[in-house]
Amino acid sequence: MKAKELEITGWGRFPRAKSLALRPEKPAAAAAAVRARPAGGLVAHGGGRSYGDAALNDNGHVLLTRRLDRILAFDPERAELVCEPGLTVTELQDFLIPRGFMLPAVPGTGFATIGGAVANDVHGKNHDRHGSIGDHLRWFELLTADGDFRRAGPEDDPALFAATIGGVGLTGVLITLCIGLLPAPSNAVRVTEMRADNLDHFLRLLTQYRERATYSVGWIDVLARGERFGRGILEIAEPAAESVPVRAGRRVRVPLDMPGFILNRWSIGAMNACYFHRIPALGRDRVVPLGQFFHPLDRVLDWNRMYGRAGFHQFQCVVPDAQAETGIRRLLEAVGESRAGSFLAVLKTMGGAGKGYLSFPMRGFTLALDFPARPGVRELMAALEAITLEHGGRIYLAKDSCLSPDGFARMYPALPELRNVLSRVDPQGVFESDLARRLHIRGDQP
Ligand SMILES: Cc1cc2nc3c(=O)[nH]c(=O)nc-3n(C[C@H](O)[C@H](O)[C@H](O)COP(=O)(O)OP(=O)(O)OC[C@H]3O[C@@H](n4cnc5c(N)ncnc54)[C@H](O)[C@@H]3O)c2cc1C
Image (cartoon, rainbow, N blue to C red; front, side):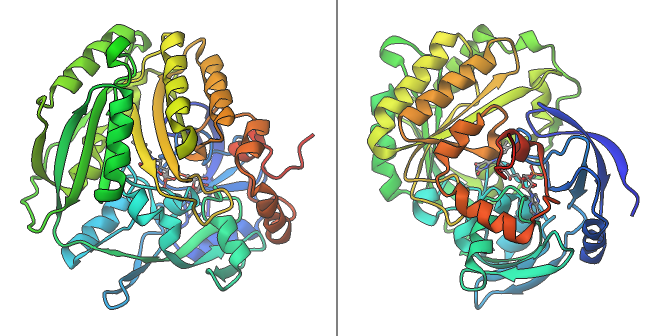
């Protein structure tokens, strides 16, 4: 297989990496690539929807997995699917929903692959009820550094299983995955949208609905001040009994890199006000197709170009329940003081810890924000990291490009267990990434 030189980025388009890319069509070709000991190491790259450097390997190799895209078995009796890693969430949902099933954890973009979803242990809008994708993983086959395939599951090499769920591709390349499914009574959800007047109101609503609703997700207006500080919109949803017609719905594309100054406090403030008032004061109900509910942003292709050529940083943390009220308030205040704006600001609840050593979830409240890569943003990210740590929280590696190695080690206490597994299955460090080097995940940096 011939390697091709590519410049690759994550969804945030920061940082950028020059790598030699391999695109296997069969597991055997992927194994041959690993056995060849690629110079500069290797990391799997799925849909490229992690924001920072998790799927990058500057001056080394990346293994593009999109062509490993076969469904191998579907068993409605056992509610399980066996497939290759390069299928996207949307491709799998399109296969499953007409057959009465769906993925148990669906991230906010359908362009993520299932391999990438497991490697970040992704969560959806139903985390309180159904957990993250790793909670539903029954077993997998992993291509490891020796070029062999190893099978792992909760009883079959449980340490390798836990190291790979959320393991950001460092244990090897997921080649086959067996996933437990949820029933899907129809192709739609009944959604209720309601306004939250301020942060206290928002946290009360989220607390109330995390127990009652199958799905819940909040959008927060980070620029609102005074009595309206922390206002936003909460969406809750339940599976609908009846399907709805799905219109092919035209996708639009952002055709070029927008000048960076277009997204500023004033333009974001105006968009936020419109977005908030879109929902009547008494709320509204509607039935929408699952794809539209799960992936509202996927209708605009290349929306990351809105942030300009320099790209943007995403920040997502989770703060445990007991510290959430002060933690989320302090985070939003720090954003306000920095005078940075974020249109895409999401507040959700999480139900409990994931099964992976580096799984992000913990019981608490999670806040996600986007900031254009501009002078001053790194200082803001450092301040947000410090507040997250002070409140016992952690930052999500799938979204990260700025976390410090020290902050990382304090946020992820099971890191020593991951390192034990890595020293067993990949003692030479064949699997490498920019994220692993930046955060000293292997622990062998000075
Ligand atoms: C608009 C948007 C909304 C999002 N919403 C959510 C959300 O609601 N919840 C959530 O949890 N996440 C969310 N994400 C993040 C996204 O779901 C994760 O980053 C996911 O991992 C992306 O999958 P990917 O295939 O694009 O992976 P990539 O970005 O290509 O890779 C991510 C990691 O997975 C590893 N990897 C990929 N394939 C394999 C494989 N076959 N074997 C081993 N390792 C592999 C890579 O090495 C890398 O470490 C969102 C992202 C975007 C852009």
